[in-house]
Image (cartoon, rainbow, N blue to C red; front, side, top):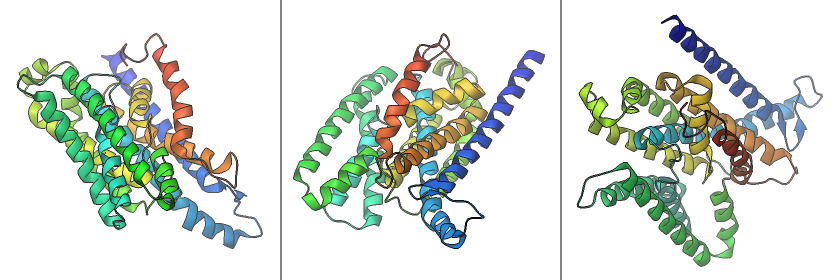
Length: 329
């Protein structure tokens, strides 16, 4: 009992340290940019302060919100499928959101309708995957994942066709958007509010999610409403993915990597793992965006491409740890 309490205490401390690290990355992202460091005692502080508050702060908060949303979505999907490789991309949710948003851009629809189209695309892709995975037989996790992979490939082909048909004036923006770009991110308050709401809705399910990791039969025997939990979690994952795509475009690896890092640092208890995945996802995207703004300043790079370069070796390092991916948390 004491050993379990000590382990929980260490995980709580790890979550607190993770929160502090997230704050430091946020502060560094505010102080550093393509124009160099901003210091409070600099001669041009009045101008620098406007740059920091009006340009950098909304972008940094948008990066945190997008990463946090993807971290939350990935954590939920990995629990529901009990597959360490599952994420919003594999299930086609991100592809659905991207398809909806790009179609709206191609049709010249206003920004509000682009957001609505991305949300409908994510929800539509999720419902289609679940419907096709069920088919005439029993619903299985493996069939769900295979159906998601096939649908994601089909949506990728559809996106390629839209890019081929897009006018040259819109093509560069669409490509940057697909690679994950925060230079044109909308005001972050909607995404931040959505993130706060979704994590508040999800945390009360943490105990049931812990039980579900042991299997549906065990969860049912312990009184967990598995069907409601599954549908509610998939819905939240789809909404979180749509919000992230609306905010920052298509950013890969976050939904896959952040939940694994969270379980490694704060344990498998979802009361800590869910906030941990949100903080890690937000930190990863903020860090990638900071590098995108500063590596070859004043030119900016797509944050999504840099995140893939960071995430791929990091995930491989986790994969080959003795207690890494697929071997428990």
